Image (tube, rainbow, N blue to C red; front, side, top):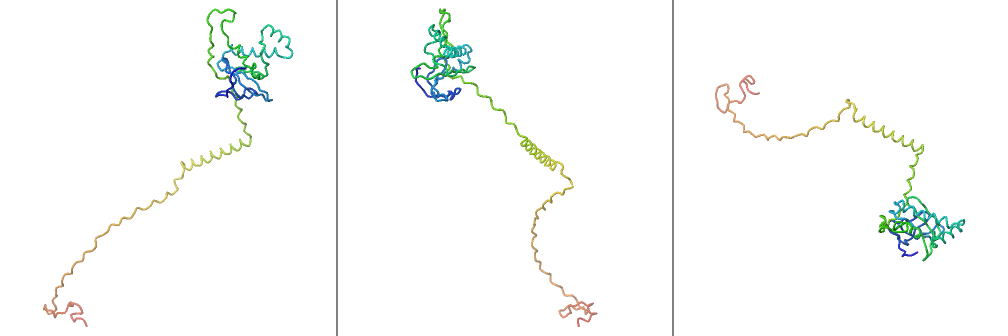
Length: 253
């Protein structure tokens, strides 16, 4: 294992399977290697393909095939085959044992962590290939289109849980409430549209009284009375002021 341990960055998964990831150990061309911890407390090295390499079916198949070959050749029943394969060079002698792995669209592998020793990055080496793979090159090397991708391939999020099933009591309560609201709405509409015409209208307020002031009466001077002639026909001031026909011409008693 080589490389500098760096903290987890944005986009790194906090968990991969049952393993809790704690830091980055290495950024390889085909993926990333993380330092993690198993549920039993063991320190592990976890290799994850990049999102671009995971979308390449050939690269993903090379990664999963390398893991399965190492997993089958390091078992208890495969010590003889493992020794022959190691002698013939089919399996690198520093291939670590596989603790857990997962295939699918976002594969990963977990191996025991050894300081300054081989780790899960051994399974990322066969993902990138060069030349023509027939022993003799007939042209320049090619580069994978996903070499610049540094985003880890993560499994799809789990499907959302099914909606909760309502109980019979909640359904009855909801139906009763809905019926009550509909009835109240119909009652309000009926009162607004079909209100009886015999219903007296509210009295209208009387108009305000307007007071027009009248002019004050003007005083008039009385005309002077003219003396009236008495029975004798005289017109002096000794004549009686009473008319002749009053008291039969005798005057007041």
